Length: 187
Image (cartoon, rainbow, N blue to C red; front, side, top):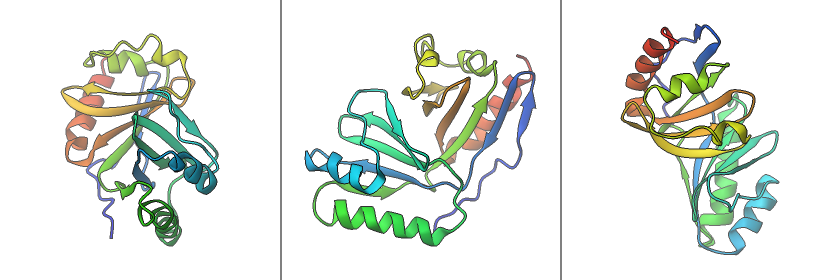
């Protein structure tokens, strides 16, 4: 059974910045080099995997992030209220992709913590400890990047209007949360 225990227990509100963990949500890592993969994913999810670097595709249920030419992260846009549906969804992907040697489906729901950051000060906060230039990123809804924030690997997904989802490994989530909480006070 997946563990959604997290050291992050609160929502933080600062001047023009709100940060909170969004859990539990489904997170799956997809990998494939097969041509048929995109078609199969499209039929199952009703969205095609993005094939352009640092982009995403989405529908009302899921967001699909490009991580590399043969790797994507899919996450549910809404919190999971029924784990049976999550297991059924994962099994469907596994049976259509992994069992037929079309690629790999790995549940990473307990590996990644998703923190939502929204407000006009989001990019001010990130710029305090991130080498990435956000100038183009913040203008493109759906943009994705993998970078370092306060010496911790993160994945960032721009969902638009100064709203982004940050994915961090669970083992580093408390450290990053404390840094974000402390830095947010001084914006």
